[in-house]
Length: 43
Image (cartoon, rainbow, N blue to C red; front, top):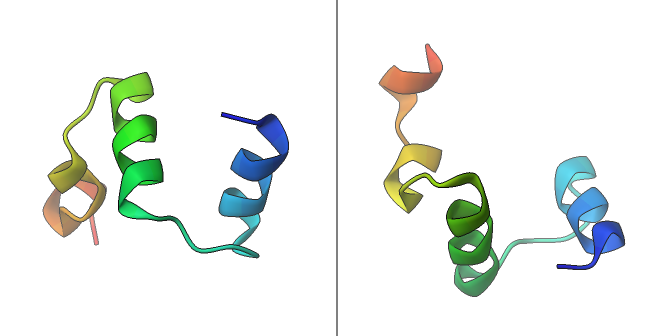
């Protein structure tokens, strides 16, 4: 993934596609569901 695209995702200036979320999860070795698990994040 292009580092600039990752920066834009972090700052919220672009929306992530499902494909991008899948790639990020593979890179961080987490399940996609973990991104949306409010209990895990303490929310």
